[in-house]
Image 1 (cartoon, rainbow, N blue to C red):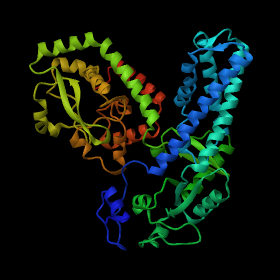
Image 2 (image 1 turned 90 degrees about the vertical axis):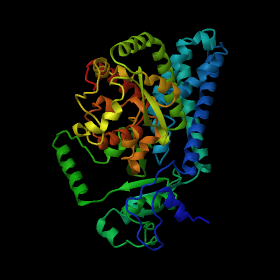
Image 3 (image 1 turned 90 degrees about the horizontal axis):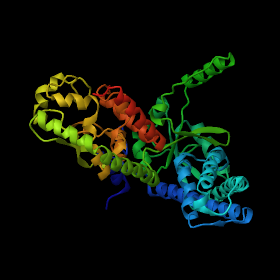
Image 4 (image 1 turned 45 degrees about the horizontal axis):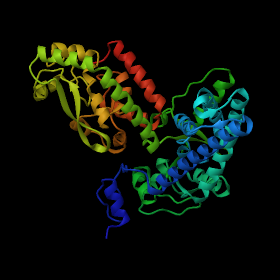
Length: 499
């Protein structure tokens, strides 16, 4: 019978240490969040969406029928879900997973924007949604009613879900006083459904005194190991959230220096190391006087994946149709100038580690892959195989690579679901084999035709740096970020800066 200990070790891809022995260092788990985490996030998302649908339906009915004395039409069935779509685009359904205190009042500024767009959309579509007059009074009534019903409905939905959703199990990465204070806040708060299952100290000296097998019960929450065995502790104790509370002389000195600088009217810019994993998508989480940063997970929700996929299919299908003449011209040029096929399929690693054949217009002479070993000494990029003046590139290849036109056949990969318009860089198997541990979280996303790595210059970004860029992309994803990357890619290509 496999034990939890052996199951955790398999999950971490670690050798099973003897009980009471020293565990392997650098234990980093892989895989999806626990069932309770998925269930809780899903309950919040679905209940909030249901509350918003109810709010939109009731607001339209009252504004149109009771106030405007008009009649809603069958088109109202299209307009009502529009509120949820707008809410999704501004992140209203992904916010709660980042926060301990899931407060409706904190999101009221965002709700203002959502109901404004919603009311404006209904006004534009009045002939579709309303039979009769829909003037300024009705629009204002719809705006006020939508906002009021959304605030009340979302507050009620969160209150109900808080009662029935699994409690959030937290581990404090910090000292005993911090862990004890956080546990006390959870115990006395009526608006939080969370508990502290234990802590892992950051202080090297304290950690050195506690390097033994089991948890040690102290006055505060139990110590569940060290930073070196953190991954195993997260799996064994089913931790849903880690709360990082660093305490160090350097941190206190930094805070004091910032206070002095601000008091003199000098502006301050801070570049904390933590933002290397935080990214730009954070929410401030106020927990009884303590401010936390709520971070986005590295995996996208089902609704986010659906939204991203809808954009991919629409753009890829349209692009293949519109660019068909250009495809024909490039194919003819390749055929007339060098022997070999028009397309170059290459094995790449996709989402979840699955292999697929990525398509490009052939820009090198036929059989160029077999010459790679001979040219490896000329490689100019750390971790990746890139040569600035590659002798294998054909005359047409120089043109289509410089303008990135050789990448256009990947629209077919996008349409098939193997790639996305924007995402992590798709790596060849030999490069993917160098990615280990937390870095493999990049495989939770579908690889993209473009990404931050493309904008920065794909030939100039080392593999180690590219992996960090991909991780931050997943940790701070939004549909607007994809749109911005696409626009910057067009600017990059127009400037003829691609490799």
